[in-house]
Image (tube, rainbow, N blue to C red):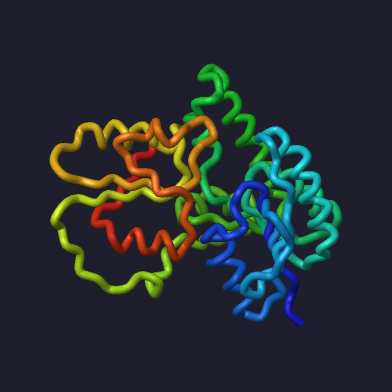
Length: 261
């Protein structure tokens, strides 16, 4: 009997590429029983993954309190053998599951302690203190979990000092991308991912304003609540695209760009 795996996220889409397509579906193909708890409109089974829906929060505070509590209750109800969570704000949930004797894996996608220093919505005088406070709490929590995952070796070198840590790099599935010959008649730039000031959106807008000649600069992904489409000019906003749609857009582009702060 294969273990029952429960993926937990309060932030990401249930069909997030890394969580749903690369991790959950891969486990299903390996004949594991897989549940995913995430913000969604309904409970359903997709490609063998049982999706348990969370109510969509009105703001970040509600997500970190009410949504996190709802997620914990549903996680306990799933009675999984292994819990795998993705979001730093779920560390308290992971610790509560550990106290119940559950095996818990923390999938550390990004260097959050460094990102806090760049968060524009946090007063600049508080960022370093909050970063140090977060780092201290994260180190404490990571020592309690069953295992850790990071996307790159440099992070693994650090977290391995705290707990058993494995690197699971976030490579694309090349089989999804057909072989092609690109016609370089004009630059077609593309950035896909969360679109926010913290992730360099204004850097891209300013870069596009400096470009001359005939070009297209596409951006796709979740748009920060504080931004509106009309403020993105001269970028062309394609909206939030599923995996099939983003593969198609990549096929029509010839320059990928990342201008994080």
